[in-house]
Image (cartoon, rainbow, N blue to C red; front, side):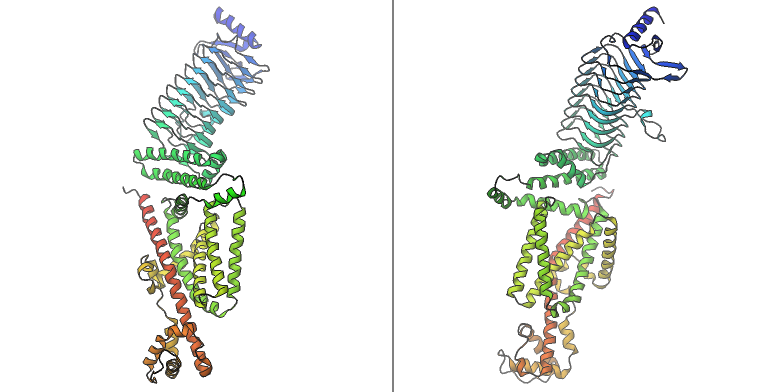
Length: 640
């Protein structure tokens, strides 16, 4: 070394309180290197046991190699005119460089910062490089200015090499770059971020986050990107929902091959944990973020990936509507009653529609789900119609049906009670439960008063049970446990195949609207009529003719066909007054009339049950078919 460099090395050693042999001047890098070289390519770690102050070191370009700082390193409010390089070093305490000016480059290579690095409100006039750095606590760069290129992590060219910090990738526990200005290109390639904040920052040149991983939170809201913002191949894990709300992209946003493996529940948890008092606004901000991403992909004609972000945008819209319906905590009981009665039904209906689309087809992105839902609707409806036909005689004959129905009502009132006490039930579900319980209460009153007659009561009961079973079957098919879902889907596919082979008209969605009678093509009354002996038919016809007040001058019947027609004409009378002058008739005629009455009642209940449910079933099936074709079209590569 020259005399001046020797003297400088001696001064540096005295300031750092280390041996002079640990300091040398590197002519190639033009820096003073602080290292303990035992032999060629063999270095021992130099440990600094006290705080390092840069006050007397600002006149020297420095490179710390294989060092361990056990106490704080402080360069607060300083002006660094020369290079500052840290390679293979460990900082056990805080590295404080806040409010400083760096006129030359500053580099970190394969460094570990166990505590935070504070570079807030700094001016970096030279290139900033950080390769293979582990920021185990906070990395604070807020309100700083970067005039030259910024490198955090570098490109990994060898695809067969597993990504690690040894090859240049950086890992951040928490990184703060809020209100920063970047005047040149910025590279954050192949890095790992747990929490990242870029709020209100301005990027004058290109910025790259290629192949980076975001694990917790990524905040880019109100940022301004004047050139390309590239996130190619980046991965946003469960909680790391990117926030680009109010961000400005003056040129391109590259979001190709980005992986977002979060679902509706992840969005909901993140929004609620962010700020419960402003959850509706937070949901709106996230929705704006995904709208920007979607529009960028649409601009590049990447429609298949754009629809994924449109789906997440609708997730946010649904959460926004749910949070809008949530009322603030009332001050008193009167205010609580007023708030509970003041429901925005427009918002409620919009939220309900989004919920239905999410469950049925994941907003027209999940083709398998909508196929399963469509098949389940057909199979379950066919199964329930068969079950009604099978168990109706038991219902009509068993007087305990009323008791079972009361238990059924009590069950739903219990559900109402617990759902009202539970804070986990959202308002949409609460409204549906209350409407259902109100309907069940009306049915219970009908049973007690028997105002509508037994046949009408059974009809209403079976119809309501049919709707409830369809609803339960649908939600069970969406069970989170895969094995439950697989069993239900297998069962519904078997039912669908049975319907397809035995009652294919159910697959026609227009049948229930225009021709529901054709679904039920077997008459129990006609079957029972054909099973009667000719003499029985004649006796019943004459009994009905002679013992009713509607046709007192009727003639004596002798023809079998005429007798059947007379019995058909008196179906309503047999149904309403089955004990018509029974005391004056032979026992066998009374028993036959009771059998006919049950057959008529069975036909009446089944036909009207089908009529009352087939219209709703047809509308649901039409919506399923519409969603099916739309989902299939949106998931195809054919332009639409």
